[in-house]
Structure formats: C-alpha cells, structure tokens
Length: 112
Image (cartoon, rainbow, N blue to C red):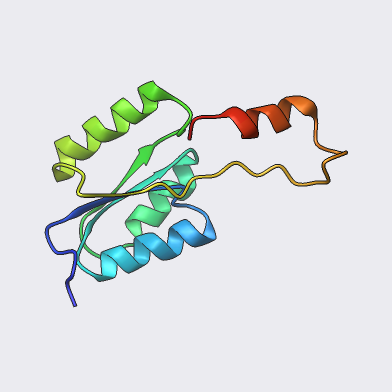
C-alpha cells in the first residue's frame, strides 16, 4: 500500500529501535522520510537503507535553532512536513537515588 504517498514524515529519535521501525514503516507506505537524530553516522546509514526518498537531518530536539534548521532542510529537499512523530527521548537509567539531581531536573523540565 501507499497510504503516505507524496507525504513528508519527520521522525525524531529515528536511530533507535522504535524510531527505526517507524521510518521503515512510513517508507514502506510511500512516504518521503526525514530521519531526525543527533547521531549523524547512524542517521545517515538509516536514511540510506530506506526505500524511496529519505534524508537525514541532525536534530537535538531541545534546541529551537536545530528545529528551525531541520524544518528548513526538510522543506528545501522534500517539501512541507505533513506528519511529525516526536519520538525522541532522553533516558537516564538508574534508581531515583542514583540519578544525579541535575539529570533528574533536566528530564523533568525540558521542552521536548
């Protein structure tokens, strides 16, 4: 099927397991896919392995400037964003007692 033919889909956190499954599914449905992540090597490889039109954009979702750039690159290369999947997350593993207070505050107060 091509339920997303001629649609541009931007997926954040696209190099992880869930993000990878998402970009493959959207590409399989005919979407132009934007692999958005902080890890350029992994992101570029992920975009290259997708069928159809796919690009990588470097995106730290906590940076407003990075968002502006990601949207501009997307529009320049694939057209306007039709679907946004904001899949990016920050994970601090450990117990409440073992996580540094600064990391806890960052996770609790960040604008994703």
